[in-house]
Length: 117
Image: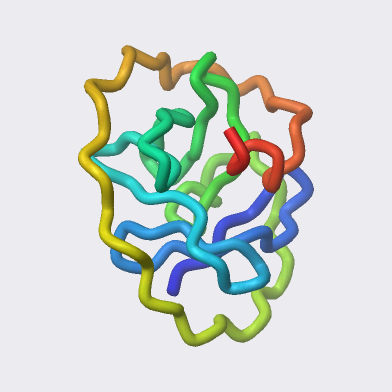
């Protein structure tokens, strides 16, 4: 389980085997070929070099692998990860739109609302 951090460096979720879990250990989204989808097959954004971005390319969260970037906040001490639940079958996602990965602007939307689509 790899922690996912918000723009304040707080742990907001986990990534395990391509599945995104929230802090309540509920599977909420999955990553396929760098694209983030809900379990309703709605495209949410992309993950590129450890940064999760919305459909407009704005940063919404990041992971440890991206924390060496000086523009990112220092992450908090990560709590112990939960034991992941087994997600339902992954749907076949649609062809995703092109999303830019060059912006370092943060989306002000909270992580939970992002996952809601």
